[in-house]
Length: 171
Image (cartoon, rainbow, N blue to C red; front, top):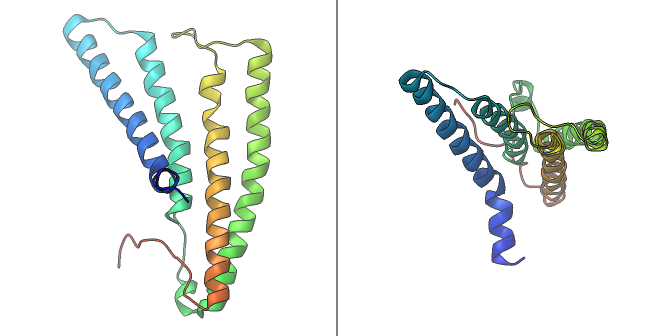
């Protein structure tokens, strides 16, 4: 795999999260200053913050799938052998994959309806397709990361290595 593709695979969500987070914080700071100093605020600032947060949530969910960082109760996992643990993670990835495919289909349907009727946002007057795309983009990234996780777990199971469990928040 070329270095650019490897770097993109490793850091795509991080860069997207950084961009949306900076956009959210900068717009919010500008809007607070405008409101407090000039007693004036805009509707477009609120929309940018809202939709940046939505993109942050969905791309962050995909990043959490990649790093296996979603909240889970794994007390029983400590008592299982590596093979059974790998099988449970693979089962979990398959279930999550099915849910993500269904959610991708229905979220894409919402984007299609919005494009068909030409809905626009109230403040920015931009097509709502750009904002509604956050959900299919997030689920599409989740499907990609779940596929990678599934293949990684299968390799670990085949090679007899312990399955990747993600970083622990507390030890």
